[in-house]
Image (spheres, helix red, strand yellow):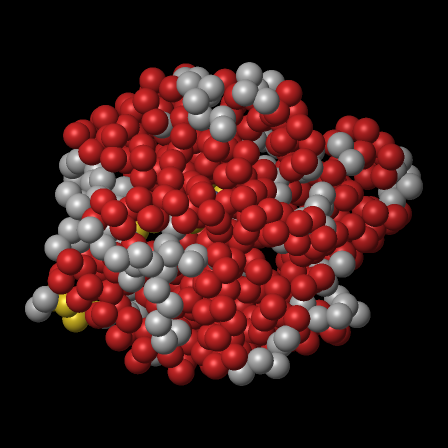
Length: 529
Ligand SMILES: [Zn+2]
């Protein structure tokens, strides 16, 4: 079914709660595994429907943040979601305590119970009010960014639309674009600082209400980290500083030399990789999507079927339009068993990475669309990034089709970017640890912390008076550490992975394993490991 034909109707929240609670009571009273399993499948179906409605509202709201109808629907879901969570928590608890737990684990794998145990640690009815407020603040933040109307060279641009100018080969023009964007952040700094401050205190309060030291432990549970700890992350961070920062540094020294710029570089110069300009995809958005179709057609029968299905059903919304939320994401519409990709094409190499990265996520979700339980369709964030990052690299042999003469520049940029992203991603994660360890820092102190970390992880950048930019960016980036870890694995694999076989195999097995198990299995089958 086409996305535009998928029907949205606001559900009756009280009725949903009654249905969920009813299923929980019946599960507690189930007399056999057959009976319990039937209830489990009914709960799965109901949850799929709830998630479908919430997601349709969310997707349509992000496409048009000014649409009053979906704005109202988001307010409804922001309030109702945490209330439904209470009922879902009741169900999860009943599953954990079920006398048929062993039977379930035998049929569906034990990961669902590991996930359930973690989920139980993230919620209690005492934080419903905070969860509702958190939804509101996150929405306000997205809307503020989507509302940006930045004057530049006589025109007016959204943040996404301004991006290509920020890597323009003309030094003066590029710098002017960075300044125009910086001015917008400066004008909105007080609002961004305030939203961030409110979110930090709110999350700290949630953590404490649940009995933790603050937010960090709760944050780990909410991100579903089920196979590595804060101590592991600290070790990873140290290794990044020791081994990878120097390599990234050498890449940027080379860049400065290529451009004839001083080292360390300004943010504006850092954004330009080649004197002749950064690699640009060829053609219109439609032509990029058509090239995407060719890539997936040639990669494998499964990817071909998948991408054609996405195009035929309007499941990619990629044009950058006024009032559209910035960034990109991939999600699922459960009742229809299809993924959906949201992006903002802007004529940069990033457009191709949407077709590869986001579609890598979507392909994994598509291959797992019939999974039971549905929580296995999207595994942990680390597992998800395996598919997206791998798909980016699997597209390398098709780079000429996407970039024409710029293909070589693209490969260099993509590979070096995969490496230099790791210090950045680690820095964002480190920053968040500090922020939540010291929730009472002032906005000024947070800016200073960000600047200090820049000196450790990105010493190739000239740090100037801190702006709201860094902080604002880090509110929404929660995948960064996962991506950083994945990239280290991905780095040595592309040379060996010319077919999609590896990706298809891991795409199928993801559901019932933790990320570490997956990595070990993938490593065992890789000729490079
Ligand atoms: Zn991703």
